Length: 165
Image (cartoon, helix red, strand yellow):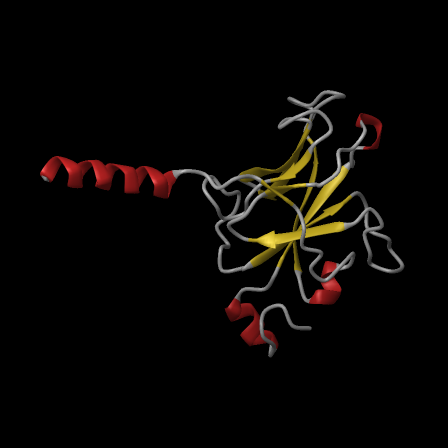
């Protein structure tokens, strides 16, 4: 009986540490202007030349003087696939995990409207996702801007609930 219990316990531990299936980005959140939805700018990820090629790109943010983080990849999972890293899941790129939701916006922001014409994609802090459609190599984004929902403490100081303008 003890052997059955130990086997069950081992399976439970392994199941808990297994990675969730990589999903398609499906949530449009506050749209093409995360700031209008109350989100805060976290960082701007640019293609890192150290390991990037025409077929693959690694988008890296400088978080502070001591830390940089890969926030997205292009062509790594498969040709033409743009995927966004998990902020707070296993191996996440941040410690600000009180921010429940995150946004990833492509290319440059329009200075007049504040929108990202190429679009923004949102997910929960423990998730990661990839775009539904593949992108031609010549059309891959030059940058990925990362935005985060205010933490409950930040929202309280600003006099609003997280995710509410």
